[in-house]
Image 1 (tube, one colour):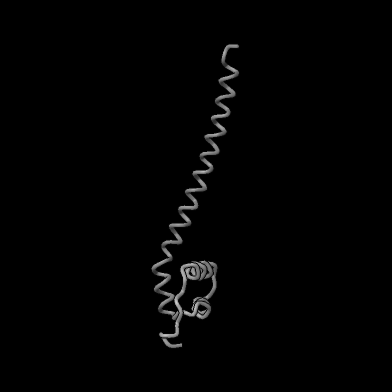
Image 2 (tube, one colour):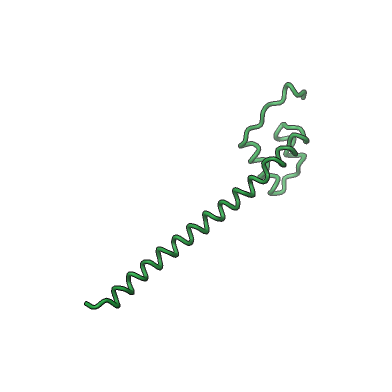
Amino acid sequence: MSNAMRRLITRDEIAQALKQEASGTPLEELVEQSGASRRAFLKMRKRYAPLSDLLRDLRALQDENLRLKENITDLTIELCRLNKLLSPQ
């Protein structure tokens, strides 16, 4: 296929290809599926792979934030319960 006939690869396709590569799909298979040259795929990987690490870290932080919020809620409920028990009636 000549360079003039190659199609542009979307961000979603790049993300999907990088996920497949991370899960063990051979590079040559991904290159063939994407329609990109090996060189273009390697450039995409170099450019976009760090973003997947950032997204994974962001997701972990979001999960931790949710866990901490749930803990605060539980502790606040417990504090209110204890305050009711200790307050004179």
